[in-house]
Length: 122
Image 1: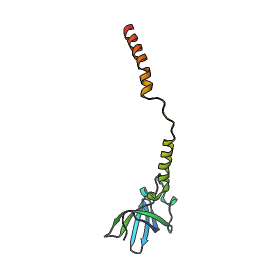
Image 2: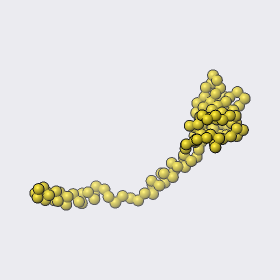
Image 3: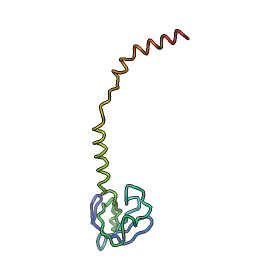
Image 4: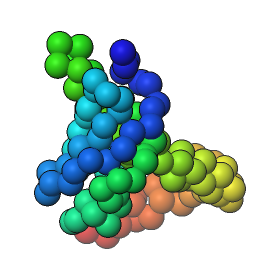
């Protein structure tokens, strides 16, 4: 029996425009929907998997009555985790801002004086 969140291996047994069928064991099959193939756009599933391939997938839903699973390839992609790490590293390396409330406070009196002059002139 399979549970949501399990990472399992299966054999691709068929490909349709909407997804790839996977045999997990003698009693259990599953479908990797086209939306679960990759994080990017998937025009043709056969660019990612082929009939006969052994793939590692994550179980995202499981129907115990029919022994059928909804599966995901993209949930296992390390690219997603790596992208998050790279973003956080870039964010951490941003230069410190030199503007802020103190810059506004330093200019405030000058701006008020200019506004009062403009008001008197109009």
